[in-house]
Length: 318
Image (tube, rainbow, N blue to C red; front, side, top):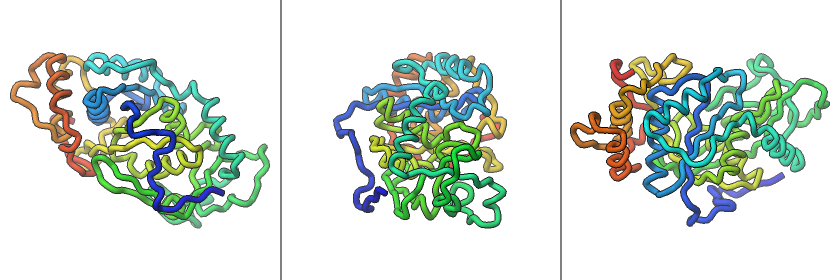
């Protein structure tokens, strides 16, 4: 089994520092875009354009049970209405199952995965709470369940700190073995897990920089771990403060965050720009979309983003 010394993190496998910038926005089509989604789209877009790089759009629809009919097209329509211009074709994870299967088989050949029949109920009394649910205690790691039994596929983790430097939040890391345990890469229902899909797709699309919300920060060490297991590149990461309401709830489809409207696109873009700590000139919210994008691209500064987990939004904006 592979091991790595802490001093080797983070590696830049198969990637040179001169690689052209390729960023991405990867919404899940579980509903329309809301203000929290706009923040992530705006930051990732402006960072790519400031580096004269490419900006790709990926539909992270791997969890097919949560997808909403028509949501993907609605998201793309809204992005266009707000003046976003993506490069290349849209990538849909539901069309990439063969790639995820190939990655899983590669891990199988290295004896880095195993079948797990444990349910959440099985773990309630034996597993300790971690940073992302219950820490899997490795019950099935040596049991060799037959393939015909209903099972998930878990990745074996190492007892080792994985840390990286986030462009917004600074140095961050955790020990996947101690803080998460062996984690699932294919679910019991046969659907591939987000952690595997995102790693495979970032490599496939040549992503060099990932700009996304703070809620995915604790997923990053697991993704870096998977990248090493699969001998893939490690992008540079930046995690943005989350937009929350006065109750502390993140703006999301699960909390019924309202969809952003297309009729006041410039105003909403300016609000998102300011949310990210960027200063604007007076009256920019009344300018044309073209004027906003020209001004925002030339004045964008990643260093101005506050290194906070979240920022409360006024109720009127929500």
